Length: 116
Length: 111
Image (cartoon, rainbow over all chains, first blue to last red; front, side):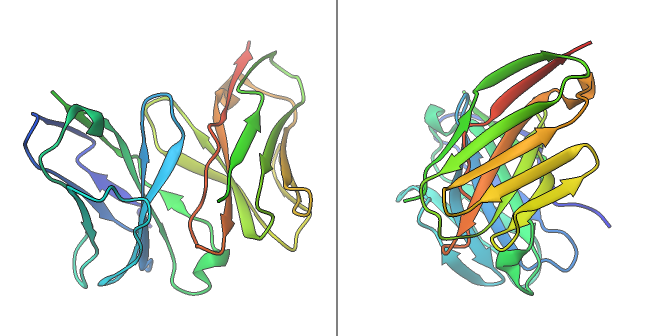
């Protein structure tokens, strides 16, 4: 049973380019969470999605950031026109649908974005 | 707004010692609390999940306790080993469904 898969592991983008981060949840999981970890900082919540729905995006920056979790395929975190301050590790976590709030979150190994 | 504090920020101990990591949180209205470890450059590994109705949860040499009313949790590690060296994170989960993380305790176990 594969864990949460994130790709790419490392991503380098120049300022102004777009970054797309992918997350495939564990098999049977339909809830996905994205977190960001800045250097020397704790993990900060960004967005919580279920299939085809954004449940909570209170942690998402108002501009340039978007997330989706389509019916088929992985969840995508998209950052447009990246800036140096977007350099961070982005982690995805998933949980099963049944009694999701009582289930542990399982995290992927993250995507480390570097903006040059 | 939930705030999580972990003390100490860093801890260095000799191999074999028993140790306690502390976590406090400001909003006691939580469903559960999860402890993780994070190795440098890696993702998070779930260690223990304590539901709000539980007081303790054990896995091998790890024991986590939860006092929801006082907003505290502790992670006890028995007979520490160099392989336990990592950053330990606690994360309560409240009504908004999301985990809120502390900054972690960086543990170094010296052989």
